Length: 168
Image (cartoon, rainbow, N blue to C red; front, side, top):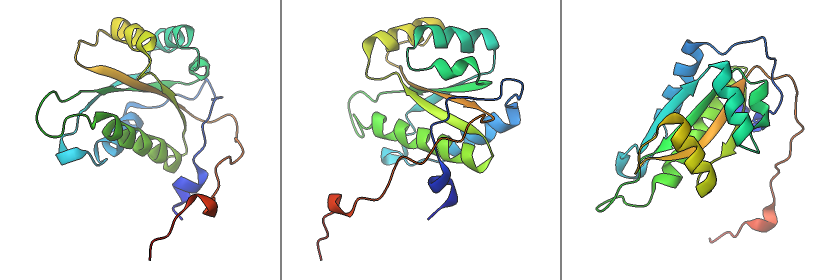
């Protein structure tokens, strides 16, 4: 199995004095943009945040993003829904694939990350939309906290053969 998949954890405590560089953010964003998307539509944009005041503000209005108090960066994945035509409606899967690439690339770089959902919660969408001036129809999809880990969470996932049907 791929080592990054095996080692990926939701890190919620970071070393506050260890910044994530712009070069590292670019590498994470490049990984995100290599994700598959329906008809190669790439229905995403990204907001990279390193400004301490912004990270702290997000932690205040997003109840599950308290780890941003110690994280030194965040990436906000912004979905761009396609209205009419093909491939309408696939942006959640596409943005989730881009997000997973960020999480796995972070592990390969020795960084920690934690995905905090925004979409489909209307209250969270409204707060992110207002704070980051994200116009409709774009949708703040999630915020991913990033930094140098200050913890090693235990493995939580596992293979459950009982959840697999084989058709031979």
